Image (cartoon, rainbow, N blue to C red; front, top):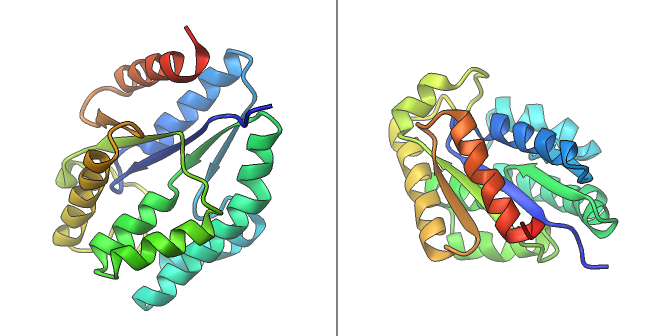
Length: 203
C-alpha cells in the first residue's frame, strides 16, 4: 500500500497556519479520511519537553538548530512515518522548511549544512505538499497572540523569514502551494480543499 499524503504548513509568526491546519484536519475527518494533526516542536514525547525550551529559553543559534533537529528526528520516526505507513494522512504545523528558513535565512547559519542535517533528521522524508501562508510581516505580527522569543525578534529578522519562504516556494513550485494570508480563512480553506481534490482525492 502506498503511503498516505504528508502535508506541512509554513509561514511567518501569526500567519494563520495553525488555524488552517486544524480546519483542514476537520474537513478530512468529515470526508472519512484518517488524519493525524501534529506540530513541531512538540509532536513527540521528546518534543513536548523541548517545546517550552525552544520557544522561551535563550539559546545559542547552533544549540537552537540541534534541538530542533533532535525533535524532528524523533517526531519523524516515532509519529509521522508510522502514521503515513498505516494509511493515515499527516498534517504537520511546521517541519523542515521552518528550520531552513529560521536558522538559515533568519539566524544566518550555513543553509547547505542545514539541508544536509535536515535530510538526516527527516530520514529523507519530504512533504507531498507544503502550504505556505504568505502575509506581510507587520500584519502577521499584529495577529500573533502567543508571545515567544521568535515573535520578539526584530522586524528585519521576520522580513528575512518571509523572503526565505518565498525563495523556497520559488525553487520548488510543484511542492509549495502559496496562499495569500490576507484573505479570509474560509477562502484559504476552499482553495486548499480544491488543491487536495486535484492532487490526492481524484475528484
